[in-house]
Image (cartoon, rainbow, N blue to C red):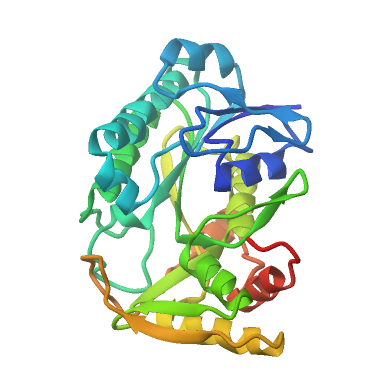
Length: 312
């Protein structure tokens, strides 16, 4: 049985990735618990280790492939801690890439559409130019370059470019949840609260359920051993590119079927961001090469969350 090293294994996505892998692979799961809170996943203990500590990572990762998810995620978190986010997202990624290069270990790297900046065309694909507009996007762009340069002629590398992840999954019987927009809308609807939509509301996003995101890593692990020693990018997303107001209206409509009465309120947008009314993404490469076909729709996920007895 092959062994997979997973960084960021205590986090929202990482814990689900370990869950997806654990029955088919030996898993070495690590996290420094800066943000991650999951300490065990089934019978797998998440080891407290920092990706910037190369000697420790080398000693832990005597593995067949590495899934690198550890990062300071998101625009706001990176803006608040620029030095730390650069150190983790860029220098930490460099450490992982160096280990992969020294030992010819295949690498699967978590990237982001934030690395692309202003979108120049739709549907977005893997070849879209990179011109990040914010610090988080810049760190992910640097990470892409580091792993791509290190991998050439040395190890196979898959860059999975994920859209906006949402939804709830369960580890050891407990829900794992992150306050992304659909999750917040659904949680507010559960208590007959207000779904606050940033103006103008027509801004579009592409949404990907956390279980589909995690499964894409499982698919990548199963395919990467046949890949050539260079970097290949894959867009991991869905066909659901909808406006934030449309999402709120959909959540409200579904909630009413459960005898709930949430309201939608338009509020000023506190963020400085480019607002686009389309966010369609071409996932044909991931479909063809990896066999990636997302299973969750927003409707399915919202119903699943509303039917949970536990308030998130």
